[in-house]
Each structure stands twice: as C-alpha cells, then as structure tokens.
View 1 (cartoon, helix red, strand yellow):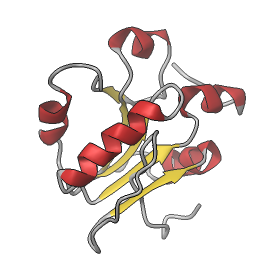
View 2 (cartoon, one colour):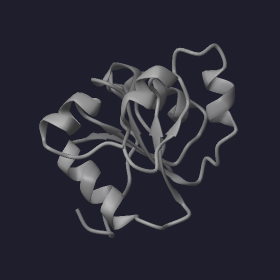
View 3 (cartoon, helix red, strand yellow):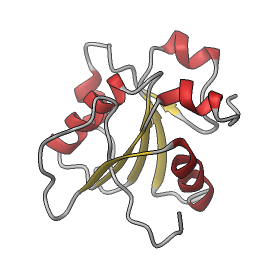
View 4 (cartoon, rainbow, N blue to C red):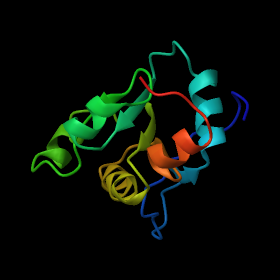
Length: 131
C-alpha cells in the first residue's frame, strides 16, 4: 500500500450501505493495515482506534492506539468528539465491533476509516506486535 492509496473506513461486521462521494469506508487486511500504519507514522491526521474494552486494550494493543470502548454506553458521543476529517484505522478483537463502529462513524460523516479484517486475532496470527 502506498501513500497515494485512499484511506477507507471498514467495520468488523462490514457495512453493506453505500458511502457518500466524500467518504472512504472499507475493510482492509492486516498486512494493508500494517502498511497504512507505516505510511502514516508521525502524521497528525492519522489515528489507530481500538474499540475493544479497556481490559482487552490493556492486555495488548497496536502501538499508538487510542481506546474507545464500543460496548460503553457513550461510544457514539465519544467517537462524535473526534475530528471527522482525519484518517482512522479501526480494529477490535475479531471484526464485529469495529464493523459496527465504522458504521457509526460513516453515519456521523467521518471521511476516512479502515476496518482491520480479523482484528487483533488476525494481527497476532500474522506475527505483528502489540504493546
């Protein structure tokens, strides 16, 4: 994946609804997620969003990730406080919550988000590190 690739929002459950012309929302593989992280290292407009519980997050997460628990009652309002014009890589444990999360982000008007297919289970199975 090169820096010229468009960032896409993808949910764990996957979204079947259409995106607007101003949105890029899609699922990507863990290898593409790793490349996305590498290509955007140090950029202030890129965020890695972990939507697992704080307990899951504390057991190991992608470096630099921020944690907003999808299962918390305030998920939509917390995500709503994020800048909708930034680029996000979203992940959960397997793919369900991140898909639901990116559906919410799409509905809130976020322009770019990628859902990491397979979540942390696929990430670890591919040999990528967590902190």
